[in-house]
Length: 81
Image (cartoon, rainbow, N blue to C red; front, side, top):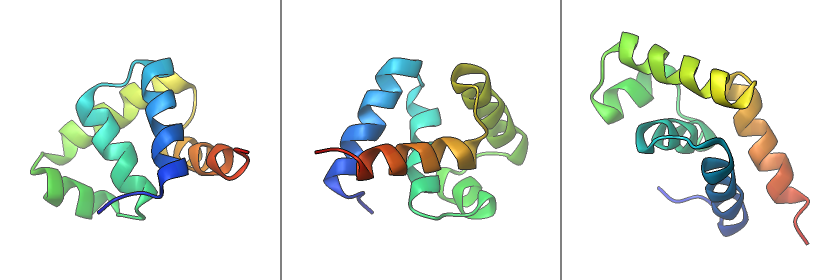
C-alpha cells in the first residue's frame, strides 16, 4: 500500500533527519497506513520483541512515541504548500 505523495515526502524527510533504519521506516510507514502492532509484526514477519526494539529506537531518535511521530508526519504533510 502506498501513502499519499505529501505524506511520503514528509516521511522521507523525517527518515533522513532522524536517521531511521529501513525497518524503522517500514514500521512508521505501516503505522501511517493505520496498521496495528499485530498486523505490522505479521506483515514484517518479526518477533514482538523485535518490533518493540524498533519502536524504542524510534522514540530515542525522535523523542516521540510511534503514534505521535506518525501523527506529526501526517500533520506536517497537511501543512505543506
